[in-house]
Length: 315
Ligand code: TXA
Ligand code: MG
Image (cartoon, rainbow, N blue to C red; front, side):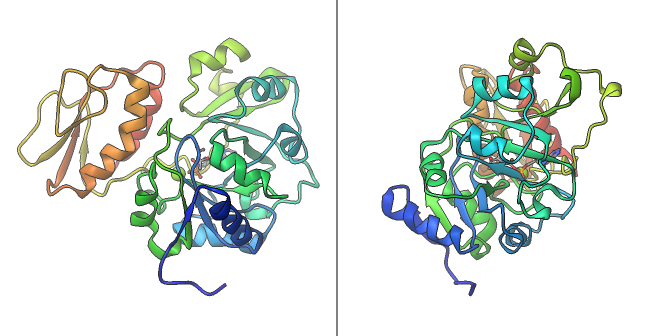
């Protein structure tokens, strides 16, 4: 497919979605809005299409992708669901929850999607534009966050274009995302064992209400490739737990600690999650050579915020 020198900007209405569906059916890439972050989507059943994702992001091939489905039925054709998996899907799908499950032998997905693992990560997203797009397709979509590998995830189409440029041939203009942090990833094992592979908008406390306590780490062999220590990097040094600011720092505030921007003046963690990446993008674009971030409580979605901040701070 010849590469154009501009990113096609598609409306989130019928006409734009029809064009997006056409590009995807042909094996091309489209950046799509979800309720968490923008994803860089390709048809998950085509090796060529999936290879384009890794290429555009500069993503290492050992880092598997999440497959986005339009229904539980489509998901069940790809992976084995036990009772816990069905319970989670019934309760949280469509929504910001990814399930890592044993993959079916005849799933028909490109091998690169799962990076050679016997498991597959599945998510039924709830964003109305993404749902409308998936409904037009007869194949599932592999989609990582639509940014260069290791960079800050995009919560707006502008972030996608700034990070990927023409490596992203088309983007759907779906406005800012709501949750602002990538989906929670849960791996389900036999006999009710489970582990949280990535904290996210659906908190561990909430999951424990459905699944009981998380299995001890030692009891479960966790394969979470791609959970790289260095990730979400704004390209500048990041100092955490900052209760004051130096003159050369862009200060991301929280609650009463009001900086150059504030994740949430009222100390609302959900709002802070929604603002986090936008604030990191602003800090990256500012003239200040360093970034400082006010302390964020380690509870509820605060855990997911701190997980991303610790990775952003890893040089
Ligand atoms: O909210 C989200 O999940 C967004 C939107 C676009 O859906 N997607 C996203 O994808 O965050 P990505 O590629 O940035 O992160 C996917 C992570 C990988 O880093 C990997 O750790 C994990 O999912 N993953 C995928 N398949 C896996 C598997 N079979 N076993 C364990 N972890 C897996
Ligand atoms: Mg990512």
